[in-house]
Length: 377
Image 1 (cartoon, one colour):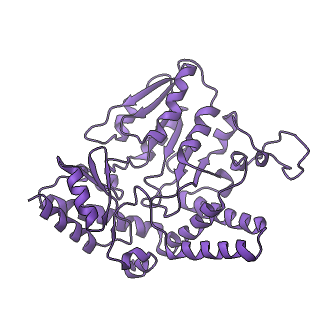
Image 2: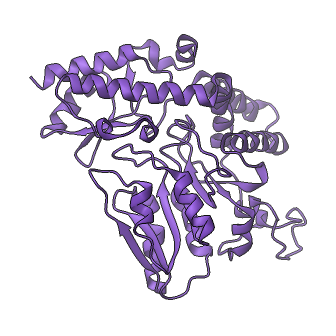
Image 3: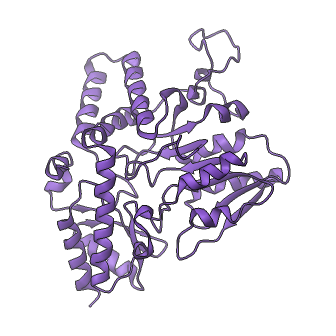
């Protein structure tokens, strides 16, 4: 891994900034900046009506996403955020009173409210209770009930950074006719995900975090089998075949996941994502994951050496995924002081959460730990 070359893509690395906040939102790379500059210049005084050229970029980006998660482009649709993606699933299933959805008590709310909204239809929402901030695959499987119809879980839990064994859950769901939904926003771009291996039926994922894209763009993956089962609750003019025959008002839904793209797409977001993904293909998904996990383990050991015990100290290697987080009594003071030193991270629910990407270095980790040591004396 040529970390020096990777860092050249991110201008903030030249400005004495340590950015360990990819679990919140990512900085833009030079690749994204150049693509956006070209697009803006073209829209200013070039080929202003360039929709067909944009569609080529959108398709290229879908192909890249497909390679990233082991599916084909026709199984992917662009949306605006993770919540609306999950709502497509929640509102598309033909629920019966007494059906159950299994969630857990450490999920980001985007993966909660779309399902809580189903209680008015008689759906029962069950919660797995976390243990020291984590919910394992076994915890999930041990809480399944006879009427459990759907399980939804984050690939990586946003506070503790725990990476769940998706394959173990997915295999059980496939064998027992349970729909398996994954919120991948805290995992994809940091660690690998394979929808075929892990038997995933549905994914919703924003692109502004580990994937190095922008806010306001997400995508869904939906298996062909699940798509056939859903009743589509929302339609737009681009959901149907023959959309450009404007006055032929016929509901003839597209066979692909494009049917969920009802109208104008987020052009800026998709162009940004397509360019951001080039970095992952250049350096390799496996190498990026290896570097991120290695940094997480290194960060954990360095914190332990100064008397701080992050959640990650209790995790196995396969449960690490980029986030390093811990509790401190004076978390707000530490957050404020480190922020003054141009160290970017998050304070979430009383936890200090650090999330370096693959282009971050062990030297930066050393600096952060040294600064922490000064503050806790």
